[in-house]
Image (cartoon, rainbow, N blue to C red):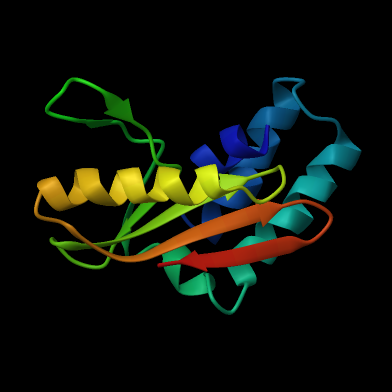
Length: 136
């Protein structure tokens, strides 16, 4: 559910709207709504991340990248700093895994083929606490 909610959020102004939508649809209850809001704001207010949830930046959530081979990749969040530089952010709810880093590297290779430089790759692990992992 957190992935679906985050898909609706580009900046802080979207948080309440997204949470109310999922509440109104009956996907989450009032207690869950408060818990999700706490986690989402912890991400958006995090010192390493808050600049990437700025409504002035162009960002795309869950946008498909179609490779030359026809394969499709779907990063959780791409934040464009300009026309040729991007930050890749992926949300995870499980334990850390090498496969998560490999996934980010696939996104980077695909973007590089499009002449877009990945400036930073970030994994955000969402659990009782928010853990940020910057990947090389």
